Length: 122
Image 1 (tube, one colour):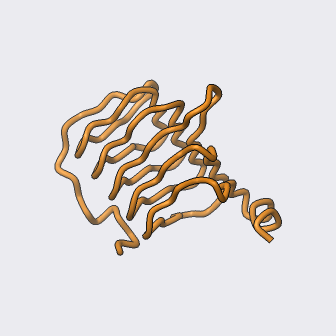
Image 2: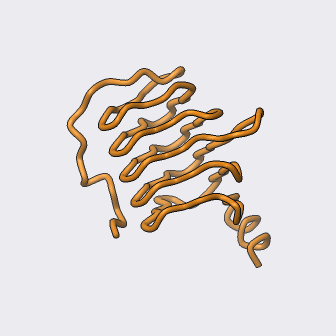
Image 3: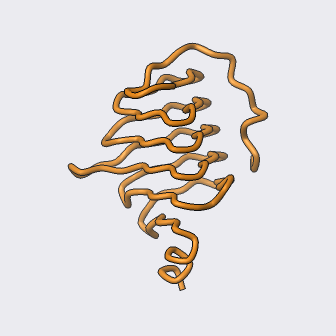
């Protein structure tokens, strides 16, 4: 059943992936997550998000993180709590708590985190 739903909706979140409560898939299509990724509580993933690795360990995503559309988070990086990843960003370095990351490669800027981005808090 997991495989059939993955194919139907183009969502690949392996059962080995650690996912916290309150995960929200905004427009659930084309989401690819590596089995070694860790996703914290109350995270929002938008369409066309990839959290992957070619060399072993994938990213660790903190709590209350918003990830915009068309984002790639590559390799063993840490996206700390209350971070925002803007649309189209390619994250190859750690993102600090409460920062917004944008661009390719992503650059981070201090920002006032807005809880309005989190759609399914628990």
